[in-house]
Amino acid sequence: MPTPAELKAQILRLTREYSALMHRANRPGTEEAVAFLPGQTTVPYAGRVFNEDEVEAAVGATLDFWLTLGPEGAAFEAELAGFLGVKHSLLVNSGSSANLVAVTALTTHKLPATRRLQPGDEVITVAAGFPTTVAPILQCGLVPVFIDNDPATGNVLGAQLETAFAAGRTKAVMLAHALGNPFDLGTVLEFCRRHDLWLIEDNCDALGCIYSMPAARARALGFKENSPGLPADGTHITRYTGTWGDLSTQSFYPPHHLTMGEGGAVNVVHRPPLKTYAESFRDWGRDCWCASGKDDTCGKRFQWQLGELPAGYDHKYIYSHLGYNLKPLDPQAAIGRQQLKKLPAFIAARKRNWETLRAGLADLEEFFDFSLPTHATAWRAGSGFVWDGTGCRTDCSWFGFMLRVKASAPFTRTQLARHLDEKKIGNRMFFGGNLLRQPAFVQLKRDRPQAFRVVGEFPGADEIMHHALFLGTYPGLTPAMLRYEIETIRAFVQSQ
Ligand SMILES: Cc1ncc(COP(=O)(O)O)c(C=O)c1O
Image (cartoon, rainbow, N blue to C red):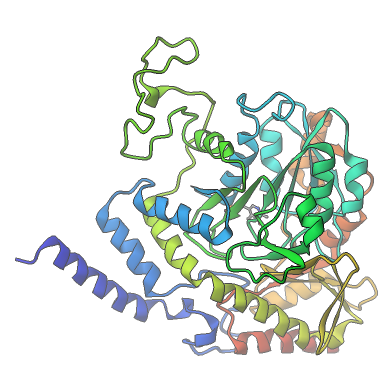
């Protein structure tokens, strides 16, 4: 009779064998494990890249049957925080939940009144992007204030921040790093420091992106150290995005830099109490911070007197907030741990794929405006990017390869998107485009015109909405797929 451990080992061995046969199409693009048939095989814009390690981890954790967030979750939280060099990472069940938890954490009554986000307070954000960067602001009774995007980067136009500021009302800035392109952290952080504002970085599309700033400027903003493992040159502070703000968020949905199926994380960058608030909102609003399966971490389970509850009321059932339950499962975290080990290779592949597409389409500048990393002013074949005079640099872990079809081109963005679709090349628009044009916001304006505020017009966000699309850069793309994408676009342009 085999022991449980022997049986488990046997199951896991067979699981690996099965996965190696079944999931060949999901292996890194460098392996070219499955024949690519141009025009017949779909070239996805994104997808899960994994091998038998992830499948073994999922099955192993499922056999252990802890199920709810437990040992794998705790390990993944520590490893993710360690990779980024932040105080804590808290796992949640999606990037949207991460954004909700991050904003809601700042509404806690445990913060000083001047910093606490209270109904009617304003949060500055950008018009074009993903809807759930903005939705939590409204869901918390706060007022999003929209400024424009720079169409070249997809990111916030930093020059508009001061115009959007309203003394006594503005409390926070919440922005996404667009498609793996860091926003201008120097400008945004200086604005936040000037007015004592929170910064939440939506890092859902940007895990592994790097931003570096001249050391004196970074020190003035309170940053002295590089992120772990990033080379120091003595003149710059170099850190991952998601480690410059107060809180940041990740998505681990399959198109993202790593996946656990559904999942996300809230990173607490440097103020430890924010972890307790975020955790409370994630976990039903409870005051207790016991891990799953623990009963008395504080050692005072029956000694608290909070609210109007009787003294000694069980701390496990004391609620200091109106919370949610947004936790993922332990087997998901087991998958995430394996993915994290592959993250450096994934990041390198995303950069390589972006560069291949950029070089392959370089002579089509008459028809396309190609995205630029923030702080770059141009891209030159052979020599790469030309940088602005700020001394700040970005190193993008690209979520996608964005281009805009010029108004002068003899075809439209949508015609190109349709053609790519016919040729089985995955492509996407820049999420919701100008969110203010979306039915949800048009309706909100009718129902509650005071629910949000806009600053000026939105030529940048509208330009993105009308003219931009992006191709994938995900690590599953093979050289043959990238060649096919380039040839298809070139042939389309020539046929016009
Ligand atoms: C910038 C940004 N924020 C948040 C999200 C939401 O993540 P999730 O799909 O995990 O809810 C996405 C989704 O792609 C995103 O692109």
